[in-house]
Image (cartoon, rainbow, N blue to C red):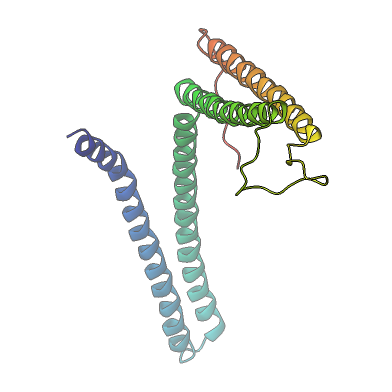
Length: 216
């Protein structure tokens, strides 16, 4: 029901614009038709003038009649273009105002903040998994198990192969680096939320300045 109501409201909002478009198309078609009629009339009158004694005066009069008709049609066309341009500017301004309302901007800020938090959460999970693997590697290096006879390969002197301490140190350094990046992203997300809240609080104050006109 809500979707149907929203569609009905959208249709009602677009009906005036559709009616204006049809009216303007009809006006442009009328102007074109009358322009063609004026030109055809001039051609006919010009041919008739050549049968008269004062040919030049007759043709000049026919031209003045045509030019006057063309000037009037041009004036109507300019007025029609101005009205169409004004209507489109109003539509752009209305769309701009609807897009950049304080509510819309707050929703966009909240969406970005949630995206930053989600990214930080995924990075935290990755860091925790990496730290867990590094801890397991360190435990295995500190407490090596006796290899089974059927598995593994002996070391250079027949001793079992153990984890490289340098690898465990590298994993620990990677964990520390990931932890630092995670804390930095958390701080950026908090600063972004704070900036959005301060901006929305300023817009909510009374006597706010009007929105700037949309770009051309």
